[in-house]
Length: 171
Image 1 (cartoon, rainbow, N blue to C red):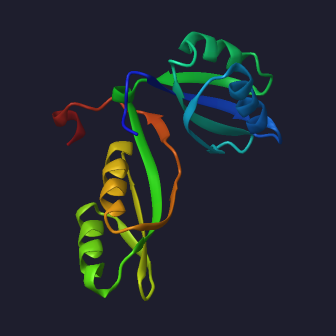
Image 2 (cartoon, rainbow, N blue to C red):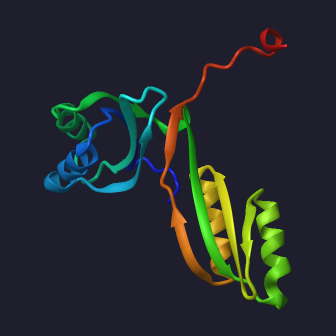
């Protein structure tokens, strides 16, 4: 899944309380909003969690999605991030078929993508890769040629890009 004008990234800061994620997901389900990706984790402040959700704006106007989220009691703040203004990462874990005759090609592919080999069995290898969603998509597509036994992706996690200092100021 690459970045697309039909997708928008929202980061939703919520109170870290039981049931909050269920309420957010329930809102999307009740309203018929389509979610491409969802990731949630506590922030540096244990009182809050950040939900990163990539939404399909063809299923509902973005303004409507934001208004509905803002009505939820436990929502503290909502930010929309354009892909060009965001640092996006995703994690992929996969076990792929890797008998002796193809194992070196799998290892080479993992190296080319700067991934990691996490486990080696007699006919399978478990690998990981973190990177931009496009990089993870490309890696997954190439792994499929070997035969994916099991696959899990985290969904996008996102933070705003920093304003970079001019080259002379950073030295």
